[in-house]
Length: 599
Image 1 (cartoon, rainbow, N blue to C red):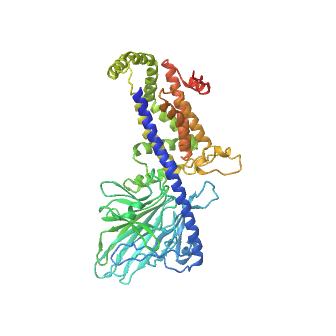
Image 2: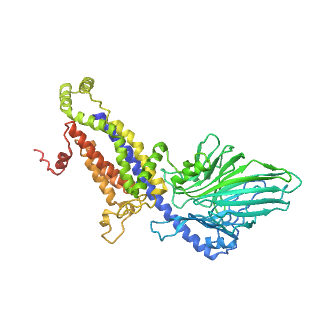
């Protein structure tokens, strides 16, 4: 029993250390960096209003190399940048923006179905912006320059709109460019009802000699996200390249230190991902290519994920076609999975960071999504999912609580053994094992359910924190975003007092409910005789209340509901096994005055 208790204390302390690191170090660091980023943006905006809008921002293309030079220091606002170049409008149920005819870039894209805050009147999410803005972020497809075949489409190419006046779900657009050697490039761009763009290039060689083209594609952004990443989710470079199907993930910091080049492949995809959004390219799946993740400094820092294909030879009088897919939008789980199937994109579902326990995380999301489609509320779906998880773990929990009940039942016999053997530890251990065998008790049976439920807890944390379906998903009352912390605070009486409290004092209603249920659950068992252990068990609910106050509300609601179910389950099992439920005795003991020590 003593070893089991120490084991549980070790687990609890480990969790406390992780939570303390997140709460005391990561959260203040994230807030400080976000404030610094906002201040820098404000200064940059003031500078942009006082500088010339004609400053160059397009990136140069070094001859014979993949584009990679960083843009000059940004000097224009987003509206000024959009007005500088001719454009073709994009309008679908999910997207609104434009294609830049200079370079045929996708550098103006907004997501119509997502807003910056829970308020539907707030601005919609801006994903792509032109390169000469501070938050430049775009996708570009082209060919590496080759003097032997003349000018080829690239960064500064002026495309002509050949057909179509607006890119919609029903109406593709066609661009054309003919170089000085007589080679004609025709680019057809189509888009589905969500976030997948199909770019098909037809190249006609009307010259008398064969030509060799080297295609490239790149996703580039000028800066890191304003909100720094946290350990639980990957943000940065991502891809699955090659027959091995290995997921390649690299943070911005990794690539700042060293450029990364993946092995040559003929299948796969790559790009840059944020928590909820991503921009990726699926190169032609028949042409060998090499991908690269890079960071460029000087002027405006930039991060680039690109590919370079093998040379493609076109004989005189012949033509060829290349098809690239560009995903730019929200990482909706059903949609990403559908793209993986419909376009045969290997492991495209890994664009969503399911984590190490993806084999648990993804099914758990699918279960929650199933309930959501029936009840229409993700908070209720979390409660129903918790019930299912508890049902699945019921046999293990039954063994755990039965073992605890049996241990309490033989506690008087254990005390007799202690009195009999005194300090003879060897004899005591042998007698205890004989007693356990006689009573058919497994003293470590209570450990396994706890260990097995830890991955489930972290999997649920990932689901709530990572999936966009949880973003701005309401529950009831004041919880309007299950992916954000409970916005209320005990220290201003949950909004009754007219002042704001510091972030670390945002102890909302649900964290308090969670803390109370955790306290009651721990009081179901006898108070440990060791004073240190008793103190840890007494203060642990308080510490967890403060720690989890900054966690997503959906996770805190899950924990509170799970505690409630556990209390009910434990009470029923203990009653069935004839073990005393210590809850009421322990609660009475808290308020009972201890007798004064005799002098």
